[in-house]
Amino acid sequence: MSKNSIANLNEIESMKYTEKIAKKLNELLQKNLDAQKGYEKAHENTENETLKSFFKARSVERHHFVQELRNHIKNYDETPEKQTSIKGEIHRGWMDFKTLFTNKNEEVLLEEVARGEQAAIEEYARILSSNELTSSTKDILLAQHTKIKEALHTVNNFHPVVF
Image (cartoon, rainbow, N blue to C red; front, side):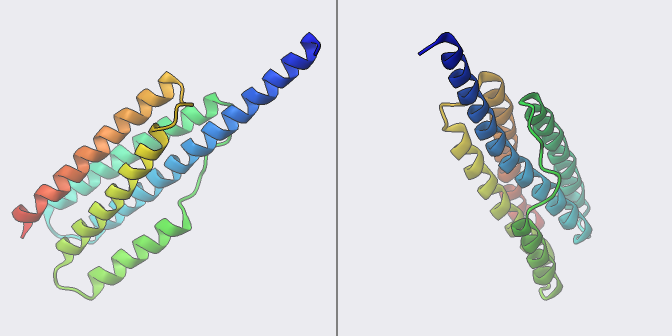
């Protein structure tokens, strides 16, 4: 095999790697867009000022995650996702439906937020378990994963305080 053939194979492998990593990062990007919108929706659907403040702060935090992931995906010369997922849209619709027909609005919101955060934690863990991530990618994802776990812990601690 000539040096040119080897160089071409290495270039192809490198392109496959960046596409694969960018796909994983885009999955997380879309989850964070969904979470940002979900927190905005939760903020709109509560009268509790403590929860309003928490939901707003988490929405802003997720916005920062989105920007961080978009920039990182662009570093791989790939195109970041721009829209939320259909699954996220359905989940937010479900939140609206449940809060409309229950008098335990805050409890429903916290349950749905906890469910979404648990799903995000699992998705981050799945991607972080890959041995293919660069150290810079892993650092970003670990920091975001930690903040999501902290948010879930806070949500779980709200239950006895709010009710």
